[in-house]
Image (cartoon, helix red, strand yellow):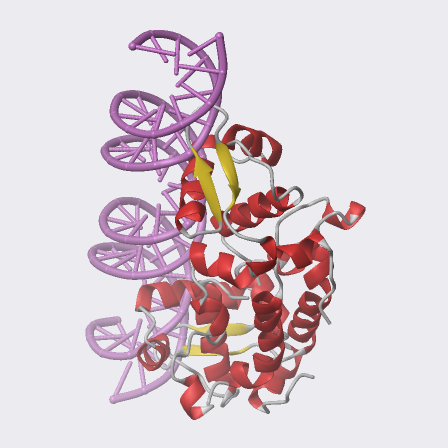
Length: 136
Length: 136
DNA sequence: GCAAAATAATACATCAAGGTAGTATTTATG
DNA sequence: CATAAATACTACCTTGATGTATTATTTTGC
């Protein structure tokens, strides 16, 4: 029910940037605004660039801007890029064979609720979050 | 949406033990059956004893048995004892002030679904899991 | 009461996530 | 073209979760 710190940072950065999705944001600004250490944030930003969410401009007046529309960035994409989606799709008890035989009681009990969460992550975009569209 | 390894071990152990909740289970048996390393499992079992879920019998013919009815052991209790419940109750983005001001878009979007999961954990017992009662 | 079988406790090892520092590279602008 | 402001890269440090080993303690049963 949680993300690791790096994923949490990624969300915070991208959500902040989506407030004005045409602007260039410097790592210094993001670092101060979000209380994330510079060097760590830099690496993350580079990773997010390589993943295609944002693009960097080096040099003076540089920074980071979205590389594509925030209507096309799904939350699951972000998770997948940073920490991987596997554990969100897999059984909560990591019984890798429980899907086959259905012998995992956790899977039976929480499968439905877990699917709802996964579906929500797969269908919600940064734009949706910005608009605070509520998932039902 | 996941537990740490120790919590996962705890669930596996207690779910296995609940199959026959009157039996003494030795750490050797549990270790082999569940593929959990002995020494680590021992510590976990001791912790689970101290938390009141099971009790230990030292000496020959010793082992571990439930210290109370599996109808009274809620999944949330187990999580709380092993890794703490905080992160399951808190905002997914760890905005510790988002409850007050409602400015966290994640909280708005996923609050409901998250509450459902938390409620399920708080109302499901080991006995329920054994009976595979489905949460709706 | 001794030996075997079990848990208890403690200390140390390993590994990955997260954090820090220093240097290199790029680019806009005067 | 030199400088300042920005990102890129690389190497190392720290810490907590997980894993391992050793020794101590308890209890049963012969």
